[in-house]
Amino acid sequence: MRTNPVKEKLLAGQGVFGTMGWEFLVPGLPQIVKTAGAEFLLIDMEHAGTSYETLKQQVALSRGIDLVPMVRPPANQYHNISRALDLGAMGIMAPMVGSAEEAKHIVSCTRYPPDGRRGAAFGFAADDYEGGPVTEKIKIANERTLVICLIETEEGVRNVDEIAAVPGVDVLWVGHFDLTNFLGIPAQFDHPKYVDAIDRIVAAAKKHNKVLGFMTADDEWSRASWEKGFRLFAMGVDSMLLQGALSSGLETLRQLENG
Image 1 (cartoon, rainbow, N blue to C red):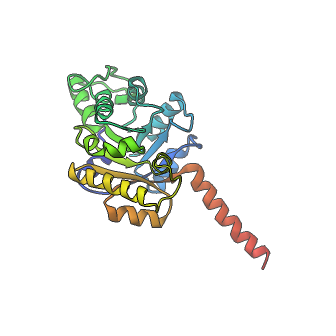
Image 2: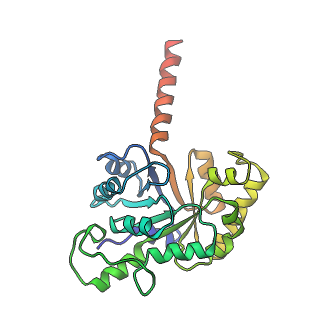
Image 3: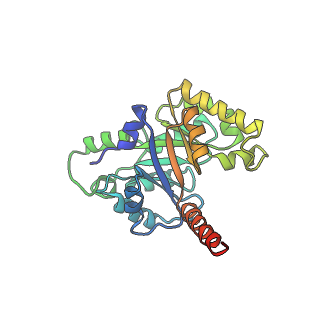
């Protein structure tokens, strides 16, 4: 049963870089992003409408190429989290985490008893259809699952210190667009309220020895976030990456046409 190199690197203080799968969950996507240098593929189910069948296919296509599949479930209910893990996801990005109680529930959904409430299903996708001692599989599964809490609401920021203190929470990920929306300052990433919220999240992560995560869109954001201590990065979203590259190339052609 596979371990999770992404989690191992993060716990060792190293940076880890990947991207988000959103619109183009096609057979070639895992290999394409792996060849580009991504260490993980984070598949969105909250906004993209991705089905569990599609998720299962993407996880299977990540198997054998050293690409770590992770998922953002549509909500933080047990059946959403456990089903994604049973299909082979090695990490859960839980949306809109607002309290320590919610964070504890999320962690419990990712752990087998006695550490949590995850139901047993062995010999299937989660353990690559392999045999072997169940006790060893439970140990590996509990250890390898990366638990990411999205901090993207006023409540989440207000309770971020308590959330970060929850055992089993590995990453505090800033949901920057939602955070500005909930703060009443949509997309104003230089607003003092947003800057203060980021500082509080960073402080909580450092205090409780948690990893900081972020979805970056350009080099400026990457550099600024790295300097603040962020180490888990998703480089853009598949559709936006294609759109940006295509737009840039077409603009060059138009400039050539216009002399």
